Amino acid sequence: MADATGQPAGKRLLAGRYRVDGSLGRGGMSEVFHGYDERLDRKVAIKLLRPPSPGSVPATPDSPEAAEILDALERDRRRFLREIRTTAQLEHPGTPAVYDTGVETSPDGSTRLWLVMQLLRGSTLEATLDHTDYATSPPSLAWAAAIAAQIAAVLTDVHRVDIVHRDIKPANVMLVDGGLVKVLDFGIAILRGAGALPRLTQIDRTVGTPAYMSPEQCLGQAVTSASDIYSLGCLLCELLTGDVPFHGTTDVPLRAHHLQSPAPSVRARRAGIPAGVDALVTAMLAKDPRARPTAEAVYEALAPLTSAPDGSPGNDNRSSGSHSGSPRSDESRDPTRPFRRPLLAPPRRRERTGDRATLTDAEFDLLKANVRALLDNDRPSEAINLLEDGIERAGRDPVLALQLRHFLAAALFYAGEYTRAASLFDVVGRDYRRYLPPGDAYVLDCSYHAGHAYAEIGKPDKALPQLRFYVQNADTAAGEDETERILESRFVIAQMLATTGHPDEALTELEAVRPLLADAFGADSIQVRNLNKQINRLGSSKEDDLSAGQ
Image (cartoon, rainbow, N blue to C red; front, side, top):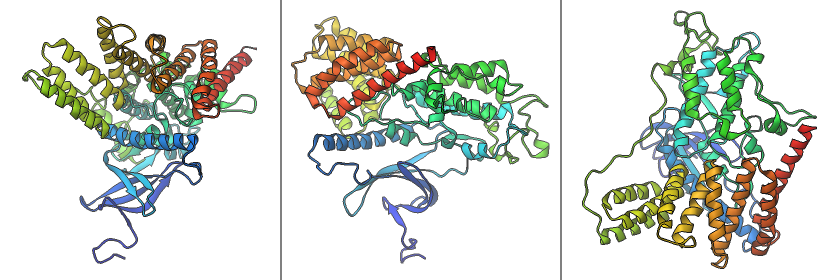
């Protein structure tokens, strides 16, 4: 039944155009609906993020705990919207197209984030695997390699802009018509993950699915692109053998397997798997994140396996209308088909503006104001473009160019492009130190942000010198903000020490920071509670190591 305007009665309408129809599924933080874009006359998928559950915010809104929770919710909201925009710019065939996003305000004043995406037609990999009989009719090597290679192609693209999925698993992968593989739920992973590193001021949350979680996720350490590779390694093992690498038991919990047990041989589990594939899975499941291959290396290793001569696994038997060894007879979702053309997108190159007039002082002041306004309004990509153009126009003025490079590094950090931000802060900081003392605010700002950016992308060897330089030279009497920065940096130093195999030093650092946090924020503050969780995790890890060695 429709109303006088033709609108189906009782249907919700977002932004005056997106009709919310029936539910497609729900998870812990969101519900996905199939809907309709009335302006462009097309079907869409609509994801609504759930508001905080009743009782999650303390009844006393002026309490420190309530303030921290409300602040965290607001940061999550802003980060979600910003990262969705970043995801929308990926333009990779393996990510669902993002059409629109916004906030719905209910009559009671509460708000809900919504996201409108491409409506996919296909089946999740989880459903496909559930209906696959590995005992009597295992899928071909080409089928498994094609799915994993397509996921690796997506990860290569998103890792370039420092987005980490954090939850690669069959339920977050969809096989669609045409054989394309779509990786789902980047927005939710980003929203829940809120950065690679655990934060002193962030409500502690573990993101991931236990069977596919990397050792560093189990320990609550930095979650970087290498964590996605571990999860993909678990998934590739399942694609090849029908089972994930590890299962927990009463004697050995699943977490201990991820932390200690050697990666199983897929070749031992299934005859005929090439030695190179077995070695690839083993490398992807390395305990040390630095020992794992990149997503691009995984793609390059798997892509040649997506086609094979007649009679070998992966034979595309078109005469019979079926794919040899495929879990379903319908070829429309055969994941080997897209490999007729390469999937791996080349690195994006920003267009250069060519020769421009030298930037004047007035234009420099206007540029700074515009950049500040764009960042305040959560539009870092535009700010980055303006700054890159300004740097080109700075000409031969080294002081002006240095300032603009510093601003650009800050904008990149704000946008979550930590790889570019880290190297730029590093170089700019070295340039500053040629003329300025170690305690100068510009020098310290660069070392602080370079250290945190390197930590975000899992480079502790570069993060530690920067963070230690900052902590040693920062002024503890400069105010509350500087004190919080110093404590946060020491917290990250401990995480980097744990990552590089120095748990005793990490524990010593955390124990030294605890009384300082208690003095600054209170013994029952979120900061102290999160630090205690890190101490407990490190202690549990040491106990696991001792048990394994006995």
